[in-house]
Each structure stands twice: as structure tokens, then as C-alpha cells.
Image (cartoon, rainbow over all chains, first blue to last red; front, top):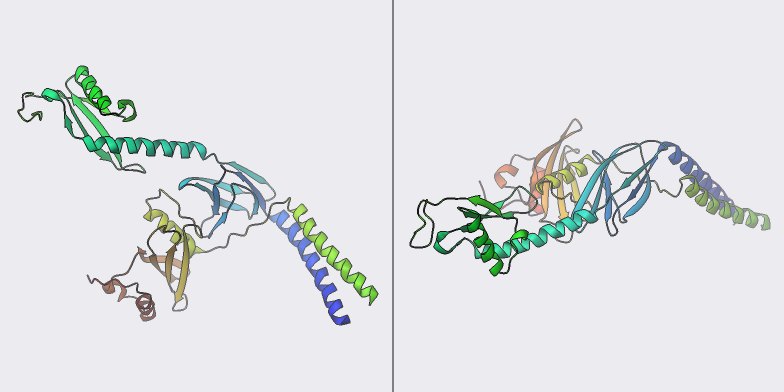
Length: 196
Length: 138
């Protein structure tokens, strides 16, 4: 019984010594990252040739070894990443605002929905082949974005195209339409399609 | 015995105090060690490229990695296990020469048998055992 007591006392003394040593060592050889992101965001940190660690919090104050890192804030599949450096005994502050990005993404999705509903009506040739409304796709961004084009010989034709879009329940201002001047050689096409 | 009891109680109190003191020294900022892992880093970057760099997949949130080494750690098969339907299961094969990691193939869903025939026998066997060889032949 006495031996167990002695063992436990020695164990606790070693444990205490280690804790103090660990605290002093890490305090002297690491730097602090103080990061704040939008609520509900998840923070992930990685450096070259390392694993990624995730802090399931939108705010964090952590100690890291000196070096170059990348932090990624993720919320609803939207991400913002920032590179940062940790220097011994110094604090690096990072603030990430994801609200603008998420709001922007939501606006993009809403606009895409409206555009995608509208393009179901296309292509459309106006009365007497005065204008044509058509679309193509831009694949350069995060989403395949429809590019809607109104082609007509003058402003009056474009206005008539806008009137038709309004009649169909869509707002031309939200559709980001590209207007093109096209003068048709033959506007008396029997099937309504403008000739070249 | 009473003296030992007091000493034991004292050492327990010192241990608790040391934990609090450590937190004070570290200014309540816990230390995070980020383990070096070139295979995990390379695999994550490969997945990132697979997604056209539009979304950085997060380890343990979007996927987890199962790593299997062969031939004295000169070959490695990484299986990317998706979480919550993040993607299809993917595999990446690496060859390690003189400490340098080279991607042999991947990320792919499965490997064509004509390609896998050039790999070491135990690598081929592992691929077969885990149904990672595609049915079609070149």
C-alpha cells in the first residue's frame, strides 16, 4: 500500500513538472493565430506537405509552430482561404467575412434560376422578324452561366424585345442581357426567321 | 500513513494547479500540432484539382483517407472515402523513390487491368481484393 502511495506521489510530481515544462516550451517556441470568421463557419488549417486540421468553430485562438500556413473558412460550400505566417511569440490576427461571399453566391444562384427559367422560352423571333432573343453558355466561372442576347437593328427593336420579356413575367434588368445591333438583309422571311 | 495521505493530496493539488498554470502560460491558446504527411497533402491537392480548384475538400469533413503501403513503403495506394456523399470513392496510387513521392495514377474510380498489370504483384492483388480493377480492358 505504501509503495502505491509513493508511486502515485512521484507520478503526480512528474505530471506537474511536465505540464509546466510543456507550457513554457510551447510559449517560447510557437506563435498564436487569432482568427474570426462568420458564424457557423468551419476553419481548416494546413501547411505544405502536412495534414489538414479542422477547428469546428468560427472563432479560434490557437498556437502553431512557426511557418507558413493556409486557413480555409467553409460555410455552405462557400470557401475563403487566406495564407498567413506564424512567428515565434507573436500573434497573427485574421478576420474572414464570408457573409458578402455567401450573399453574392445566393444572388448568383437566384439570378441563374431566373435565367434558366427564361431560356426555356428561347430562341424567340419577334413579330416581322424585328428582333431575335437567343442564348449561349459561359463555362468560365463556377457555374455554367447562360448569356442571353437580344439582336435587333435598333433601339426600338430592343425595346420591343424587352416588352416581350416583361410580358412573359421576367425583368430584363435581372437577366443581364447583351444587346447586339443586327441588320437583317431580308426581314420578310416567311417562317419568321431572319435571313442573313 | 497519514503523512503519505497528505503528500498524495498535495501532489494531486499541485497537478491540478500545474494544468491551470500551463493554460495561463499558453494564454488560453491550445497548441495544435499539424502532422507532416506528404501523402495526405498530395491526395488533398489532387482532389482539389479534380474539382477544378473551385472547392478545397476538407479531410475528415468531406472525405477520409485509407492508406496502404507496399514493398517497404515504395508503393502506396490511397483510397479516398467520401463523407456524406461528397464524391465517388477515388483511388490514388503513389510510388516513393528516395523519399520523393510520385503520383502513378489518380484520382480515379477504378484502374484498368492493362494499366495495373505493370504494378507490383501485391499492389495488383490489393486492387483486385478491393474491387478496384475496372471490368473493361483497353
